[in-house]
Amino acid sequence: MTSLPEENCKLMDSFAIFIQSLLGVLAISTLFIKRQREVPQRPFRIWLYDVSKQATGSAMVHMLNLVAAYLSGKSSHEDSNPCVWYFMNLVLDTTIGVYILYLYLHLLHAGVRRLGLEHMESGNYGTPPRAANWVKQSAVFFVALLSMKVTVMIALAVFPALAVLGRIFLAPFQHMGDPRLQVVMVMLVVPLVMNIIQFWLIDHVIKQKPAAKYCIPDHPEPADEDDTLYSVVTDEPGRHSLDDDTSSPDSAAGLLAHRSAAHFDHHARASRTLSRQGSGDDVRANRHSRYEMDRSPIRI
Image: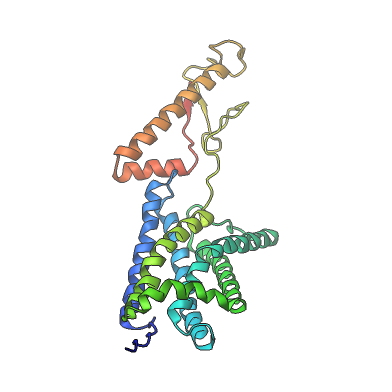
């Protein structure tokens, strides 16, 4: 009894395109879940800018993977099945490719800092956030992503024996007779897990790292409310002047330290309560205040 010949999968028919679209929606939606859990939470517009970088870049890499899979399948003596080569590109992109991307981004950002370009810190789009800054940062990200992809493709060309791993993985599904099973495995099941991990790691790399938000000056000086983090307001002229003896518990310096600690302790408790129980504009305003620097005055 002769066995049926193993049929190669098709990556660009209607079924494969549907699977690819489903994967994209599921993978990107997990970033929304990540946003709900992050502290401090990015304002929605900033988060949208960050996610759009990944979505556009992932679409670019996906198209390159399709082209690479077909070209490798036609020219390789190891395996002609494009699903094998797509699988290997995916595995390398979502593992060592993330580290390679990080290195390229580090080098490119060092270069733009030397050039003195403004608003090139990843995730910092200005105040208010501007689309022009997103375009500049996205250009750097896409160059790094393209460089990573070229590096992975060179690695597969130099070491074609890596296709053995893909062939071993797909062997059980090839023998089942329906090539669409291979498409489901290499374009939905495996990528869903790998892309979620990749997206979360890259999102951590490209988002703006929040600096320390709250600090109490060692020697606060009176100034306008609009120009300083804290403003000291007295109810009576000459009362609790900063020239008072700081060793006294009732001195202005002592009161300032006490009220500052109480102020931020109350602010932190209120923020946590709103994050757990609140909704709507109050929660969004609270999250934005945690992401930006608090400028409210302290009364003593």
